[in-house]
Length: 122
Image 1 (cartoon, rainbow, N blue to C red):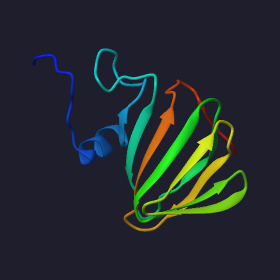
Image 2: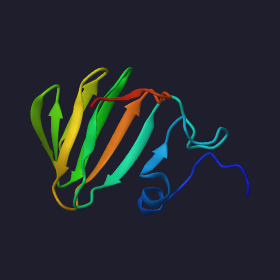
Image 3: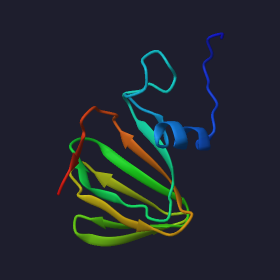
Image 4: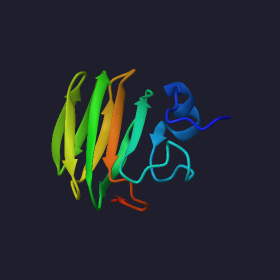
C-alpha cells in the first residue's frame, strides 16, 4: 500500500475493534492514528452505558453529544448534556457518566494523549 497523508474508516469498525478510539498515542507508531497531541473516540451508547468515576491528571477533555443525552456527575454536580451540546473539563475534574439515553452517540477528545493519564476513583 502506498503512503498516504490521509486515512478513512468507519465508526462501526473502530467501535468494534478499538472501543471507538480513532486516534491517540496508543496506536502503533508510524500510522496516521498515532498522535500524542490528542486522542479521539466516537461512542455509540448501549442500554446499560456508564463510565466509572475518574479524572485525568493532565490536559483537557471535550465531550460532544451528537445524538441523545449523557448524564454526568462532574465534581459532584449533576450535569445533563443533550444532542448539540458539549462539556469541557479541565485536568483533575472528577467525572462519572451515570447513564445515557438509548441510542446516544458522542465524541470524546482528550488532549494531550498521555499514557496512564486516567485515574479511576472508587
